[in-house]
Image 1 (cartoon, rainbow, N blue to C red):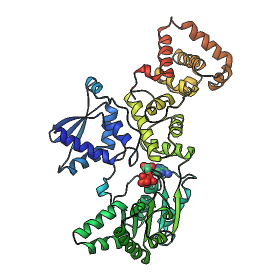
Image 2 (cartoon, helix red, strand yellow; image 1 turned 90 degrees about the vertical axis):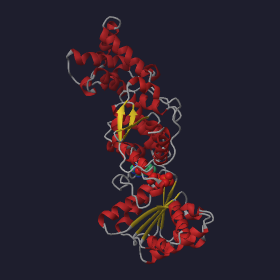
Image 3 (cartoon, helix red, strand yellow; image 1 turned 45 degrees about the vertical axis):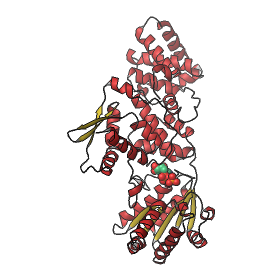
Image 4 (cartoon, rainbow, N blue to C red; image 1 turned 90 degrees about the horizontal axis):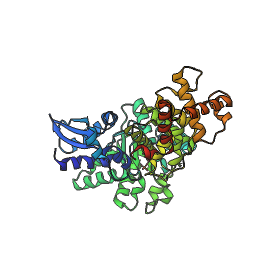
Amino acid sequence: MSQEIWADVLGYVRRNISEVEYHTWFAPVKNLGVQEGSLVLGVRNSFAQEWFRKHYLELLEDALRSLGAENPAVSFQVLPAQQEAMLLPSDPPPAPAGRAQGLGSASPSPADNRKVLNPKYTFENFVVGPNNNLAHAAALAVAESPGKAYNPLFIYGDVGLGKTHLMHAVGHYMSERFPEKRIEYVSTESFTNDLINAIRDDKMTLFRNRYRSVDLLLVDDIQFLAGKERTQEEFFHTFNALYENHKQIILSSDRPPKDIQTLESRLRSRFEWGLITDIQSPEFETRVAILKMNAEHNRIDIPQEVLELIARQVTANIRELEGALMRVVAFASLNNVPFSRAVAAKALSNVFAPQEVKVEMIDVLRQVASHFNMPPDVIRGSGRVREVVVPRQVAQYLIRELTDHSLPEIGQFFGRDHSTVMHAISKVTEQLGKDMEVTGAVTTLRRKMQGLEDEGLDA
Ligand SMILES: Nc1ncnc2c1ncn2[C@@H]1O[C@H](COP(=O)(O)OP(=O)(O)OP(=O)(O)O)[C@@H](O)[C@H]1O
């Protein structure tokens, strides 16, 4: 396949996922051409291969379809290490921005977002916290009694806080219970474009029938009605027709109706007829819960303290939060290191202000466990065979060296008293330089814990 077509494919992909997702996954991909009718893409390792199959196959097929391919096929091939080295992106990824449609999920393109509800945006997948519980309760009430509870429901809040997610959740809820109901999800931009096309093609009746015959109308980013007189006029009539027929309307906006400038007052007052509710930025616990849910959905086993570190880094926007998690996952897998706070901090250091990461006992234990290929609990357990005792002593030695914890605290962490820890430390000290296994483990792990740069990790 020519590089021009590949550039078009990348352009399509880029428009449909967040910047951080794009740079993490697509920047290093190599176009290997078409083989037996299938576009072959070179990826760095088998993890990336699996990830692409699971998360981006459909998106890539859509991209090819949009370029005219009738039966698009895409396959992924792991590149040999040498070729891979040449593909490492030289520029640091930019700060997350744009519209990711959730961790790893391919999203509909803006042009055909009408009628398409993102399957991930359900009530089950919506984490409720103090920042969004009113909006959530209102959406649920509306889903249960469309056209009766609050009409319209007006949800406002900053970007990436879950307005679209809640709207789609109502749509899914309704379509599951009443499959015959007509649901229309549209961005204000698409509504405007449809109107322009209808006027141009002399198809206003069709346009009106379409929007005025739905049972649930979901309109995103209604603030973009500002200054568009003809669209406002048309939307006013659509609104009235639906309202009078007790059809549910849900609107989202980045601000409350009173703050939308140049909005006709008859529309503004209608937007205020039902319920106006906002979504605020999530607090720490909600952010951790969202990350946890995302990790579970993607079957990623990531320690709580790593999720907490990510949640401390990204505070304002859930889309960015998801991007940050994805970055950490990609970073750890591409560098083949276990998840730790230090790894997460390193993964995010190009994107967010670096955070001081204090090494914790659990971090050291995890690293030691991974080095010796043994579960952390076994190291902390009561086993007395050499295979367990050596990692345990190394862990205690490194914790003493790399953290501020006292001997009794370390003892407690291992369910032992401080004299055992003292013994472990002197034992390791004695073996350093003599016992290859112990010396190698201490040196490697110390380097890993102190500074990841020394490990040749790529951000
Ligand atoms: N409470 C939540 N629980 C789980 N995921 C959430 C929650 N809120 C938002 N998200 C996720 O955050 C991402 C951004 O949400 P969404 O697109 O709904 O934001 P938005 O407020 O509509 O943003 P915009 O103003 O840019 O349209 C989505 O992937 C969504 O699933």
